[in-house]
Image 1 (cartoon, rainbow, N blue to C red):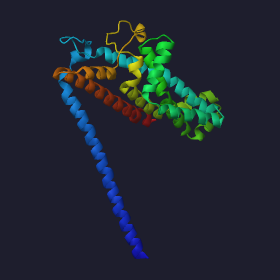
Image 2 (image 1 turned 90 degrees about the horizontal axis):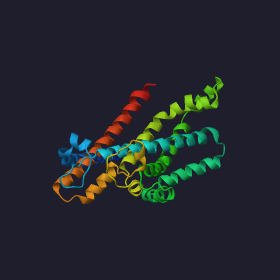
Image 3 (image 1 turned 180 degrees about the vertical axis):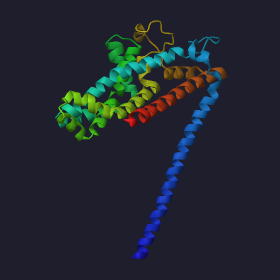
Length: 292
């Protein structure tokens, strides 16, 4: 009997060692693949990245500027507007579902619908946004139409992240606050939401990454204008392309070494932006929230 147990333990240890080796090699392969892709893109585009490239507009003329400043501005417009629209609605919905609603069937229906919407292809949101906001509401292909459509596409992510974060908060927090005489609304704003904030920040960084990298939705609703904004407020009703749409457009038209370098330079700026975004989100989580 002891002999069989020793053989079994030995086989188990061998299997465990092999599994650890497989996991380690998988992680190394993924890491090297990511580094290789980033290094290739940056190496081919770094020669074109300079102050002029980042601060001038874009011209399709062969001798004109190939700057990306309008696209950077448009990207920030879409990110900010989409977040302003989606996060208050998503967080308020999560608060209602977790703190007020007593209808389990209704809660499950909303959660199930959010999960379904999360799996809908981006192109469907793009067609929907074009039909409803661009054509139906007569907004045309504009930043506001693209931002509203983008907000709808990330709303399920915001809702589910906020809902899970609030459900993970110990019930004793809420009970202690109410026992001390705090109202339900005060408990939500002073206890529930601050406790759920770290996970909400993570979902925000994921949503920003999705907005910046999205093309299928915005190509139908945002348009392809690369003109410099003339007015900070009226610009939301004008057409404009984000960095990702700009990258898509110039990559299609790249027919020389110089145009390919501009394409790689734009891709490098996108990679750097996403890298800085992730580092910033990680810093906020570790240095601010973990100190509390």
